[in-house]
Image (tube, rainbow, N blue to C red; front, side):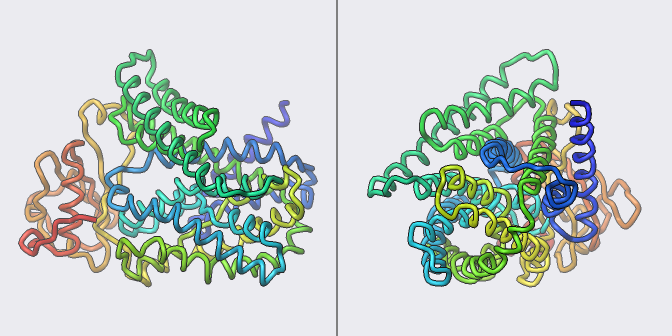
Length: 490
């Protein structure tokens, strides 16, 4: 037991350090976690771990925690403008992707129709951990990030249902769409109800310690998953919507809760990817390289772009954003965990599916995850006038009903050259600090903003939305944004 605890602590410490290493190398840290698991496994250090059922169970727990963190840290004001697009990407896009991928793999790899569609279903889910950890540092507009975060948070539910139906030995009947609709609607309703009730109870609870509020908040989210699962609804959708409602409610010690959820999310990501790396067999992975390349080609070059086009068509999304959304369909642990379902149920050829998905996740994460910042700049989607929430380990901001926003002024921003007095932030907001180069100073009304400056903005909860809109408007149109008709909407 002592040795196990020590190894676990060492792996966790190495994984935390790997985050810093991955930033310097420009690689997604998730790949390094997989690598750590492979090093611990049978091919290198010799740890034997082949329990698919335990891996699936622990993977499901980790996914629930990751969805909890994603929902709690997602701002409703950021995803509201992209709500329709996000729902379309998590439903219409999933259906089109499953169909096109299945057709392509049926003809190119010779898979029977049910197996080909099962492969398409497993591969159609974007990964919440990959999206949340990679996209938030790219710098694109909040509407675009909101759509992709909603997609990754919501599409696990329909994909899971599709995988279970296709992996089952029972025939798929016309009642399957009705069953899927019930599970999704019921899961969403349960999540909203649990989130609202949890927020109501937490605001009126008088817990003896500040540290109990984050624990209670996470417990409400986990309870939402349990209630959804017991009601034969979508537990994944229930936990994400409950966390989304709670994260946007006025919770006691909200900053502490979000910091705790973020740490819990990192722990779940690290544990999940190390576990999957430990489960993998490098020898079998090499044999699956060619099928993985074929499946990846069908997915990236055909299924994903066409499915995004179908989902985005009613919303008149610009082609540049459609290209970015197509390239941002990051795959991670979710497809691997879902691929274990047919393996556990004894589906013929399921082991090959697990190996192919594992190889494909590595390839796509390496190619897509590392190239997303370049892709965003190439498409001209990087936004400098976007305010990011700064978490502070203090309850003072909660008591005052205030928040901290960080704004970076990038090359090409119309914020360059604007005097602070011309920024005209709404009442309840002020710029408290400007960092220029290595120096930080308290700005005056005559301070003129420059490219590469960083501003720390303090604002009340009520003024947050108006503050973000004003900053975005000046970023795009300059000091005369209001007279030019720029409202600052995403």
